[in-house]
Length: 137
Length: 355
Image (cartoon, rainbow over all chains, first blue to last red; front, side, top):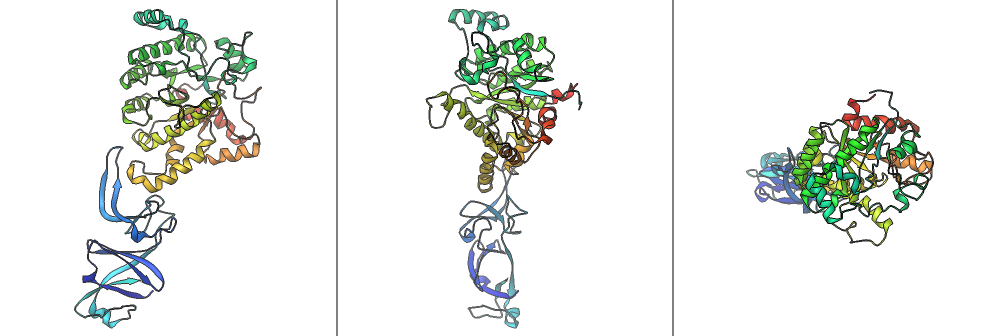
């Protein structure tokens, strides 16, 4: 797997998402409160574009009428049929063992390391003093 | 569990011959009300006396009357098929009344009539507690009143009432059911508060009877989605005279949509199919399957459970001919479960007294 530099960190603030093309593969990358997550931009159910989905929290219940909302912004709902996928695992909520979205590793890497390489696909100048969002795909 | 019982019939009907029969079991003021109002009957239009469904032709009396006596139940069903235990479900229309007080009074009379005129007279018989769903407090009170008599093994409600059964206003009834080891039996029929189809009133009897399947589907969805099964995990619900083969298709649909909108009902934390397999049961008649035995076997296999079907003759309703009490094509390996084991696993009060 090659490492692809997809954006300077300062251009990819928390609460935003990007659809990137990595060697022909559409990958959606999310910045959730400074943590990065990347999934194939294709819902494993019917192929919906996950980048267009709504990020929600995990809704659970101990009994009817009680709602427990946690992990705000860590679940992506497919815009087509509403299936929920956990950004941390890629697993669907309803069929976790059978249906999961393909995950990719994302990290924030200092410019000094990026300059050393091997990194591919950067379309912007890399500066040693900046950090970069890097995806392995 | 004992091998001595070999056939448990989970749906036979003890029919009230007329209002006169209930008079001795009504309190004084309600007896007067029956006379003042000229109430002769609480029959609904669900089972008109002359409808073919209402009674098998070979079971009717000389004047064509439905076989409504205990002797007829014995000779046509209990003795003939060697039924060891039969659960009597009364379909007298107390659910139709608009007065909550009156409904409670008639439900009480009906249950007392069943105990005295049927259960006391044949040790093979068990009963379902008819409850006045017009008022949840009254319904619970009737359950509490009847529950000490362990011959009452179930609570009986109709498929189509005032509101979907999963609504929280009804939850005290499910709590009482679980507390007293009483499954809730939902029987075909309507209190006719609403049209029997979601489209409005149909014109003909066949439409009305078939519409019950829609009612049952809506009740299953309500019980699952409102969280009754989650709240009362020991509760069993038995669909009576519901038909069987519509269930898999309906549950595929419900489960499919649950996957997308489950966050609305987070207490439904596993697929509806699984919940239903654990807590819902269905009686065998009317078996709404094709004539080909192989196709029947396939449909039964779609339930993906050997535990869900309970034998029922639905006496005296005309659901089959002769002695064909098991529909052709039901796999032989299921016969023992359907005829006995599944009922014992569903009705704790039967299991506790199993001979």
